[in-house]
Image 1: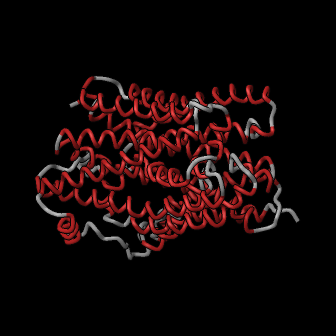
Image 2 (image 1 turned 30 degrees about the vertical axis):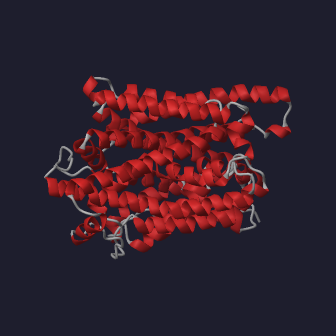
Image 3 (image 1 turned 180 degrees about the horizontal axis):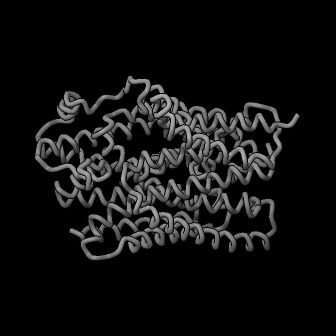
Length: 488
């Protein structure tokens, strides 16, 4: 089994390098790396955005989360659609009007250099940790089910994955990522669909019968109606909207792909189309979660548990996939690999872009001489390698702390790190005030600290548990802080 999986992994990786070669063979300069030469077809970007948005966290944690949370993830997805509408109507016109490569250059134009570097630094922190956790999950699963049996230490597959991603993004950057993401999206969705079909065949039932059985068992409940619960549905909808605005609209990784479209109208069609596809794909993964639980209950296959005897949601999908057949195991691995690649390749490119433009002061190619372009090309390559090493170190360092669903960990991190970005952009777009730029970093640091204190002690004080809406509160505190340091 392990040998078959390794062969399929190598074949899939070879396919990625073929796509890389075709996408970057005519141009491997900085304009292609950072901006995709503004020639990406919007349907390709829209489809590829599904894989980039889902990542390994959705692939593993959303199906596994059905055991504890049922379908209460869906209101969050409904909020995502509202957030995508805001991005299409408010943010994309701004980015295209200013002809931005790094979206944090806007903060310099609006407030000053300190604000620009604060926004860029928070993005680097957010993406370096969040995306590394997504990639960690892929490495973790493959290590547990493949490499561990060979006695290979955890860091070896981590190094292999990062090295592969570095190699196929090294030349083409975002131009390559746009096209490889389409391949990754296909394999990611295919893995979920194949597993559901295999489970239906094993249980000899249809999909409607499966969902009806899951509904009777309470696993398809969508709306949590307890206002004090962390997944209360109105909190989920509002939080989903602001999560999308921040983690997509204010995220260099996600927006860099949108900004490779030729025109604003194409980029808007891309965003709105991908938002609708996102609903369908998440329903597929939640249905997969219901199918996994139904299979375990009907077949007697034990759900994976930790040392304390609690079910580990992130391990349900791989455990069942490897148990059913060799085919579902291979498809699962390919889906995991696709999810990991789609998350990490764009992030590595975006981290390089942000550092080069917001800290090293790169300019668009039409604004520089050939000599400067060659110097920036060499610098960009070293920065790209440096972030790949940092990425690897975060993945390895997180392993001792993996003790809960990673999707909760991911959104906890986002709530603290993306909140200041939300406050900065909201203040910049919806007020005409200037601020004392040198004080902006202090406001941006204090806001997450206050939110952390509230998250820890609010249940003791009032019985209220913060969910993803902590992101909104964080942004509000940042906004108030900016009001306090505004110029007369």
